[in-house]
Amino acid sequence: MYGTCRGAYAEYARVRQDKLAPIPTGLSFEQAAVAPYACFAALQALRDHGKVQPDQQVLVVGASGAVGTFAVQLAKAFGAEVTGVCSGPKADLVRSLGADHVIDYTGQGFAGGDRKFDLVIDIGGGNPVSRLRRTLTPRGRLVIVGGEGDRWTGVHRQLWASLMSLFVRQKLGTFIVKENARDLQFLNELIEAGKVKPVIDRTYPLDAAPDAVRYLESGRATGRIALVV
Image (cartoon, rainbow, N blue to C red):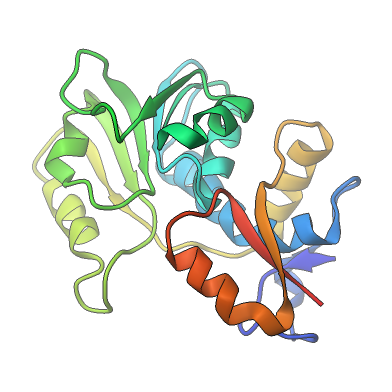
């Protein structure tokens, strides 16, 4: 079984049954460990809040990160044409996950051009809502995943997007991730069909968890980081 819980940096953890699902065939324990939360965030951003449809143009900002690597693969599984935004050295990885186009944010911008997107999934953070809106079609959707910064100011973009959405035709906003077994079962089907795979950057022994967190916070990680016992 695999799933999510609080306080998982441990040899043993208590998990609610409604947040567990069988590990899909062919997935290692390390891959199973890193999959659930990133999958929940990417799947719910695309399907539940982005309302992604086949043949839509989807932009994933932060495509090489934990959630972004899942978002690229899931968007392709839903039949969208996907553009990933990442740094140049990570472009090959994002292409290998199925991205039709890759934009190096260090060398060129992705806002204000002629190309417009039906859905923008912003995981990278730091992009003003006004800039993200310029990438959207007139009735496009923007979904901001996660918060940035400290406890009190880390959701200002999300709040601003939700407020602005009341006055424009575009749908702008964010959401709170819901952890549930149903979405894990959906992920299992895609993994076993070869459409989605977890991406692991590094593994660390459990007693090196502080080092793993520091590496994660450095922003250099590609995909997920696993702790092993």
